[in-house]
Length: 486
Ligand code: ADP
Image 1: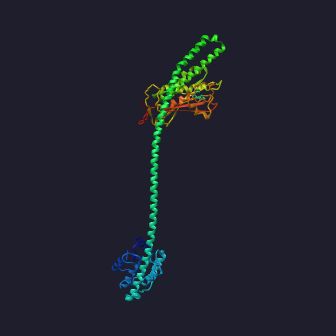
Image 2: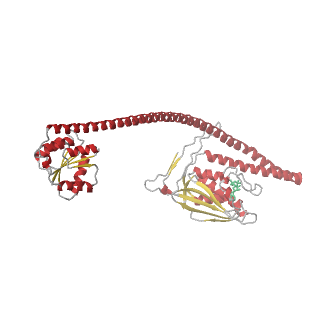
Image 3: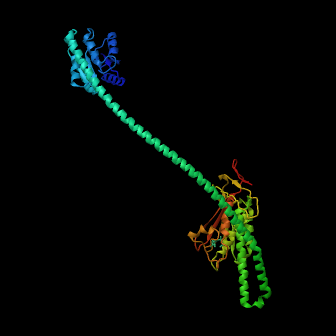
């Protein structure tokens, strides 16, 4: 069976075709898009059924039906209206008056639609009822009714368009308001951004000025500390020497009280000398250029222990060095000073009557990155020393070495573990354990200046384990860089 479908909406046409083919009755479907196209097809081919929409351009469904029912060769083809726009009872009546077999409202369920279709196909042939063209006066009545339907539909469309227009106008107004708000917000953001950029620039300028001031102040302070310590050293040495000489030559004559007073002068002068030496050392550590080179830790440790030999003997200390010790990248004198400070503390901070047990060992710390601190650009007043900027780079493949100095001394409370690395920080009595409070500050500063770190693990009453981490002196892997730039 061949069916002609007519609809200007391509999707509707496709859905209708799918529904007919899906019925499984072997319907052959030919699609057209308006009445004119449909009439052409009807003239070319034979069809057993026409299914048509109503609202279409060029020629609508009503006119198509009227034309079909007026033509002799076509009028007996059953005609079905399938529409979503003409849905009033008067539309249905008009469609049926034109000779249509059914008037179905879109969208219809496939079941319902196909059962209507089958009904039409099985209906007895009624073509003889409209066999002859209607008399002119009847045709005129039909045309008037047709016009009414059209005018009616046009009215509805005009109303719909008016509503749509109002909606669009409202949407446009909303969009314009939205756009204006967005433009305003963007202007505010741009202004805020400008303000921020200005404040940033001002802030940066202030930070630069303040940093320059601080560097200058720091330089002056360091220069002052250096000069003061340096200049105080010789009068102090003189006080110490003359007091010692006075003790030796006139001690007998002074009597016990006089001797005791003079001995205290000597003791204080010695302590002050120690403080000045450490102060100069610390100041040097912050400012001086440190040229790094491969250093044998075995030699460093031996030299440091040699300086402490008298102390070791006096205290009957047991010193254990776990050989072999590796080579590191360091400044030889600074490395020796660091080990000396840690070892002398290990001998010093002992409970009374306990034999000092010191152990020195090294271990690898793979994968940690060295960080080299540049010397501060400070100069003693009136002196101009050339400080070379130092840049040290190393890739992770070189690794670090951690040198441990462990003791069985008094230990340190957990809350003091970090504090003791600050300058002049002491946590034990000065009377029982004399010192300047600068030894560990020198250790940390020195380690950092050589691209390493320093730290401690300790438990009160159970001893301490101080460590210094330095770069391992190994042949760099291919592609790795290890350099010290002056
Ligand atoms: P100093 O030894 O001149 O007092 P340091 O900077 O070397 O100064 O040490 C700071 C403080 O850290 C010491 O006063 C002491 O309280 C503590 N300390 C340092 N080394 C040890 C140690 N091996 N055992 C216990 N306490 C220590």
